[in-house]
Length: 147
Image (tube, rainbow, N blue to C red; front, side, top):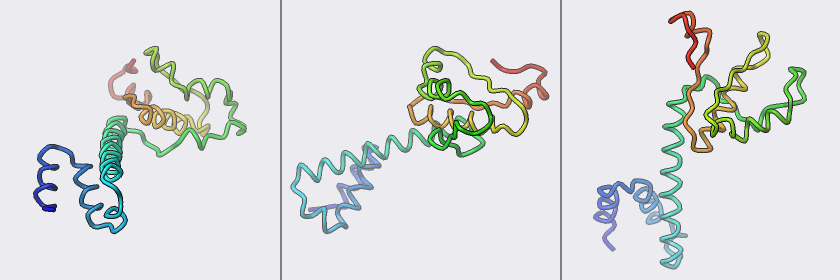
């Protein structure tokens, strides 16, 4: 089988994830033992994963999150007064679907920015667009806080 033309054709078609998987599968001894339907399924799975990862990376870049925080790492037992039920509701993202904004306020050192970044990261993983804005910086620059 002529792998080089196939690899080039996959790239020309914009199937970069599939081309990458094709190259790896050709080099793998395990892939050679797979029947054709399973081999093709492997290529399709890798192509879909490649596209998903690329879109997630673009959403994360656009979001401009300052911290790498995850909602799975939030400790609701901490003494910051975070309501577990409310936080789970925020994690679900219904407020985003309703086109509502979220403002997190509280005393210094309560990890408000970290919580906002965690919620933003979860929203990006849920295929939603996010933009992280610190109101204090915007007010200093423009005199108003964006909506």
